[in-house]
Length: 267
Length: 303
Image (cartoon, rainbow over all chains, first blue to last red; front, side, top):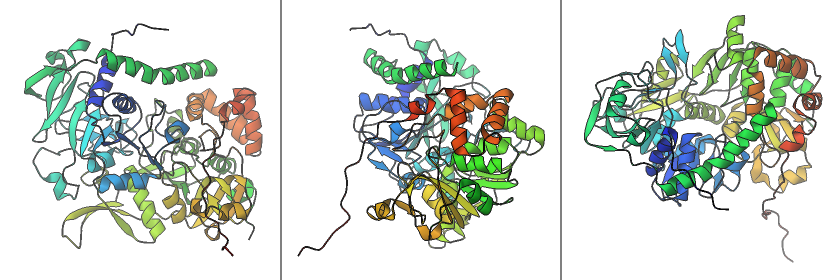
């Protein structure tokens, strides 16, 4: 049965594809649930078949698996290369053996500091996020960290209300190392539903805009809480290729079907 | 020594009001039946430590927890009815927040019997402003800075395992989260197990033993003891299904009153859940089990 794959895609698809491009073959990538997991599987099924997927509950795997609904499932455990605990996974990173990590974020600021804890006062919050989880560890341990979130002015403030996962503090060099955080770590990329960013001297710089999703530079600026630095080489974000979209659809289909079945059961 | 007791007796004897309790199972094989028995016995003023615990939401929702040592817990009232409920009752716990590795290493220091342990994360985070158990210190050997966390030594630890003998030699496999450091850090240890097996089964593959029997105070045989979490080699999980059910006041109250306080134990709980989720609910969580290849530990000397 041949089926025409729609070339339509949305910002979520773009985020997954852009994130997948950051994963290099033979590298170990620390992956959380949601978009990063889809990105890791897409990378594995395209340009990075030998990438190593590391999951915080204690999973290290190079083999195929179905896109899961959570980080730890029987499916993510089954046929792993090694099962251990959270400490073992973190030790790999702490000793310098994890190349890339993905985290989400409640808020991120100009210098890549991430707030996963609270908006407003810590003791009297306006909004509570669930906390660091493994995110602080990922940013401290992985050689490169990519932060993924939906962008809005509220989530892109000049300074975060609470610094859960330090990026480059106020941008002055050497502050991470002075605290004993491993040299050669820190945020290198931010992927949002509007664009992609890199860091230059500790400051976030817009490098591409998801023009294929109808986003403009003006829109990006309007959803940023500071005077955003824009790369002189600003590009359109490379849109997903037909092959990437087809593989992405095939990757997410089982989970979507599973969720649909569960929804029907709970109704 | 045979340490097998009922769930009721294990909890009533070893979990006391005011205790700091470690719960094993970081999304995998949490001791859910034991946590629900703590609720049934209305043990309060607890302090808890663990990672990504689903049962913690119910302990908090019932107002039994004073302090939570955690890396991650949903506290958004709009998304978590149980948190709003604790707030309304005036029993909202204090959260002592770490990264996940911070929690893991605090327990590791507890297991090791040392006062603190260096960690190279958390430093520079605002978590340090509110959590006095994380510090940046001087490395005495290099003079450079390093992070450190204070040891956590739980009064009692509860771990659910796939198999255990009557003496408490407990074997657990699959992902281990913070299970090994947490249970070995705990002063008193309760093991709940899917199945009690002959000691010979344990001794033929002793690398799987996560804690030796002499460190264990009570053993409880409890099939489906981790439900609604999944357990490697045993069953699938359905914790999103449970959380969806608990999301409203009605759903929450029905679950607590009919399924927890309205049942005398976990076996009765499993029976009553079928009325809510369908007669075949647990059959659908069962799996076709695939064995690992046997390995060879044992020997007899050749003639």
